[in-house]
Length: 279
Ligand code: ATR
Image (cartoon, rainbow, N blue to C red):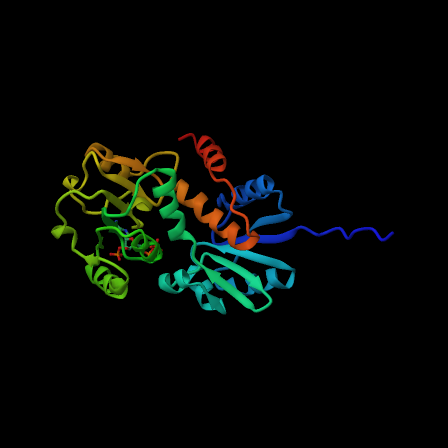
């Protein structure tokens, strides 16, 4: 009788610079354990000028896919030979899958955000008035999945207002998206999403407290042991607040599904991360 072959664990990684503090390895190892998938997942620090070489080395060593984080999401977009529609729309790739046909690039960030808001927080986007703050890569990546939820209106505001105008123009055929300057924003919003990098610098985008009310969910894509200054401000003006930890876990689940064909249960993984953060 021939012994059945021992299958080597399939290899995945997250590539970024810096990478040491990434939570993705913990998340994917937890997903693999939960779904009984044989895989390894490691952090890979790529030199700033060495993203492509790092990807090619991983592929040469039998890697099956990778997550891509700051600052390589645009390079990953260029490297991919086949793109999902949502990756093409966002101009950035956070998930690579190495297939016989080539390098498939996807962007799961927007789906992660929407799942965290709609499923985990239980807040529907359909028919709502939504404000998206920022017009960089983070904002661009979530516009298509947000519009797919059919909000009544998606307003995009950015410090450099021309960038917001350009983005709104690019997505105008996909749904009711308009650009406004910070000064022109008025009335309350049902959902306000902070996709600016302001929280990283402990800064607040120039928004009025009157945008928030008791029916507002204020969402910051950032997360940390303490609520961001944006979430503090929104809570002070009556909003319910939520940080981006759930988005992180949900975008990972969407990548895992793309690679393995199984959707892991995210609730327990998110709860473990929250308790490790102490929030
Ligand atoms: P990311 O990929 O995280 O979106 P990015 O492409 O550099 O990074 O974009 C950063 C976003 O945060 C931009 O919308 C930026 O506004 P500008 O286009 O006007 O630069 C926004 N941003 C950064 N710091 C900010 C601050 N202190 N207040 C308001 N917006 C800020």
